Length: 170
Image 1 (spheres, one colour):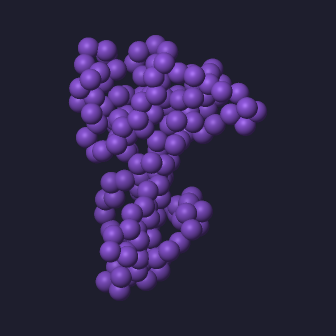
Image 2 (image 1 turned 30 degrees about the vertical axis):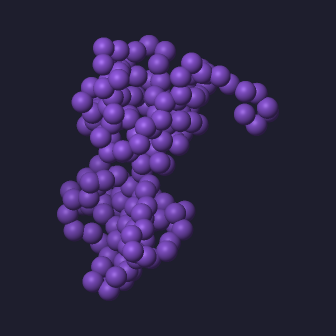
């Protein structure tokens, strides 16, 4: 930690991949077919056990569905939340960060906001046909998603645009 304090753990778990490898957790009550379910504090269904990373999914609560988002940005946010929760501290932020990016054959794609994307986007700049576009999707729950396709845009600018995009009219 920043003050030099070192923390120890009996087990530190990291996983990678789209299909969570949870077979080794059989019989523990920690995992199901989706992975290891966590709440907003990264607590599992087993008291005193917290989880973060690719193997997790955010459990639904009746107002939202179960949600897997195996992106490194979520793993970082969940790691922070899980560590704070394990120490009995308030979480420094939500256990999710709806951001990911990829680059294939020189084409950069950055996404800020919830997925999947349904419906047609609003074009803010450029066009997909031209190989570069800034697109937004407004979701019924008031959230927005911004996609930079073939454009090199700072994540902070994409987050700002996602925060100001209006939801669709009812």
